[in-house]
Amino acid sequence: MDCKHNGNGRARSPGVSDRILKVLDQIESGVKDMQSGWNLPRECYVDQEFYDFEQEAIFMRSWLCLGRVDEIKNPGDFVRIDMGDEPLVMVRDQNMEIRVFSPICAHRGHLLCEGSGNTGRLFRCPFHAWAYGLDGHLIAAPSMNDTVGLKALKAEAHLPSHKVEIWNGFVFANLDPNAKPLTPTLHKLTKTLEPYHIDEMVSMPVAEIKGCDWNWKPQLENGIEPYHSAYLHGMLHDFAHVRLTSFVDYDEDDGAVYHPTGFYYPDAGFNPTGKALMPIIPTLGEKERNEVIFASIPPNLGFGAVPEGLFYYLVLPAGPGAINLRIGHLYPESSTKLPLFEHLYKIAQDGLVVFHNQDAASTASVQRGNRSRFRKPGRYSFQEESLLQFYQWLQKRYREYAQEARQEQPA
Image (tube, rainbow, N blue to C red; front, side, top):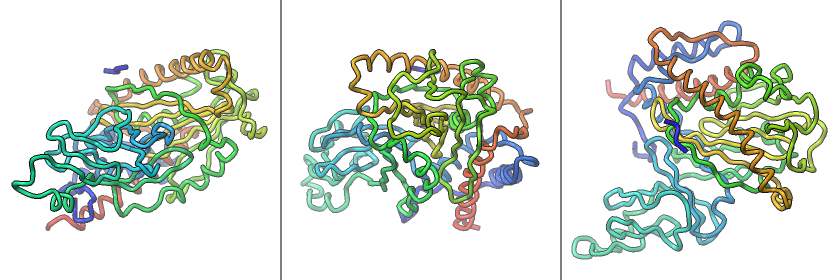
């Protein structure tokens, strides 16, 4: 579907301009508290220089979700995605370990693969047939012996490899070799989600939506901000009304922003019936059967945990005003074996498409409004506490990177 290094391996921009620092000052003033604060300046959504800064401050240093472990079940299975200008591939190696590489040939930089599938025992560059094992090491380089032998090439040529963590069946990678672990920052969310057993769920085929014409941040904002649900989604969302939302305390070391929204009746679902279509996850208690957990692990994973399963989306930035999306559903394995599963799953999918289309139209409109020179940051509703938390997550990382970059910048 279409919607219209420095020496340690970490990518580094030439510096942070005074203009960007001025925007950061405005952000910092706006994230102190709900009563006196305001949302992000327009530059954060439409400005090329700020987007370039953000790629270094956020995407080159944060844990990025690439998909699910069961998308790559067998040795050689791979999934390729682009995270901004960085092509990445997650692959299952011969020892069943999950690895993440930059799939760029060490010869001329040709991409080794596209899409998803099984590459067998190696990745072979279609340009000059250089080949790499599933561990990223060079194993063949035809017609190179007259200039530099294969033994010498093997010592210097390989696929850039990145840190990997698995959380609840989601595969995360970090392009910063000095990154701190992700899982400890998710301890509150992990505990909240324990009854769902998300790591044991089965992934449905991922839907790709390409070329959406809005910045990456509003996609996450819509997923965690309940204020709009009673107005934009109207009666469709009434069973999980904003007045039933509660917010979770956030501190600067948290790696997730999330909130539960209660149901007016148990076992509700985001489909035309308003009720769960699949069997209820048997390990859920009364509390979980009466709420949805809307969550984001910034910068690119958002999801909703409901009594029958989980829906999620991966946000892949493609410029200041463009993203690609990968959207998936998870269900307990027992649900997928129901005789009517495919039929019920289609209804569930169609129900979420309605919500997505409403959000997409609204987000595209917000993007157009943000382009106006007259757009100023607005104030928070008390129903937008999760937005403030997301902006605090961003501000901490913006400032940390800016301080480091300024220290390294020549006088």
